[in-house]
Image (cartoon, rainbow, N blue to C red; front, side, top):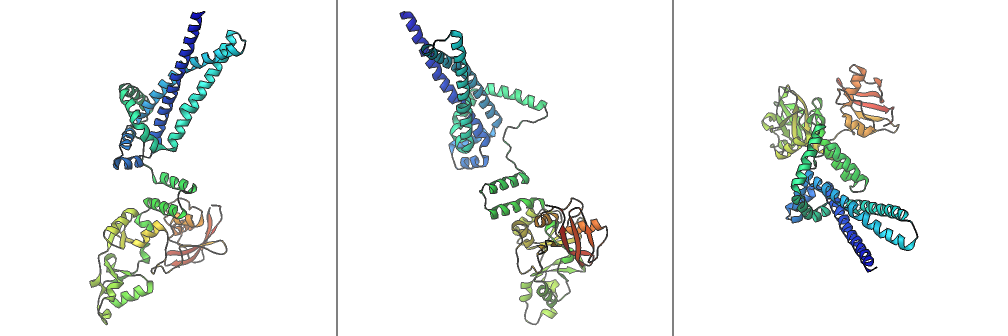
Length: 445
């Protein structure tokens, strides 16, 4: 009798001890899950900033991010060990406690008691493992990635250090399997993002109220600069305001007054032999009464020259560095094809703005009848931004180029053409170039 009681008491003690071990394993499982998701969700730039500021925990977290593959393998090893331990310890202990309770409260056969106890114990252990050991720590780590990474980094790295040989061995085998299917394993989380990726992030931030509309537009335009060249932002050759080097100052002043331009290009012979430019301030500094006798060739300042495929963001930096506001754009043959100003580049960044040099209506204006009046030099991306309808892809770089391709001839004023997206009518010509068009959109954007 006494021996039976002692055996029963010993069994109860063993069950509760096993239950305590199971609780510890459940907590450790949650620790490894949280560490894994914290490293994956943390912003490396934020961790690097904190580490640079001297935060010791951030330095430890950064070391973990830099060997991410090994850390994740360590987390998986820890999770697997805890899960196996739970299955080995928790289920029998919980089942024994439940079976004991059922035996006291109900009169059941041993088989029924065992089946009920096993089912309830397994369900309870699986539920706690999923909720407490997996889902809860994952949600916490994702909600506070950098904070959780710094809190867990040191003990987690200690575990990885202890089991590093085993983890390295398993990780090496896993990498070999991955290479067999043609994928190269990465030791660090990829941090580089393409402009399209960043644009999606900006759209998502704006959609959730994290960015104001003006900030979203400015940042989006900044990203779009990466796809633009000097040729996209330039004033075309036929619109360049220029005078010959032997022209007098009063001729240059008249051009500045007529066009509103403060900088007039000075050429020698033709526009492919540019000497520089003359600024309106240079003319105003001349002594009174000398304009008619002073050639602008002697006043010309140096002008920047850039290839037509030069990236706009690089050109902006160069113009600011050299304190230049004007750059000639040349093609591969050395022919001047246009001129780009600092204003042109800045407008690509922040949008159009009006100043004393703008003397015409907007490049794209919606009229009262629902049609659009557009400039022939409008780029496809600008056309889409204004009308909401993209131009079909092709060799053309402007709306005029698209219309000429559709007509298959140089048009005249009044010519019309219908395409898959709209009806185009030529409103004005400048010699052989289309100056303006009326556009009636025929498809939905």
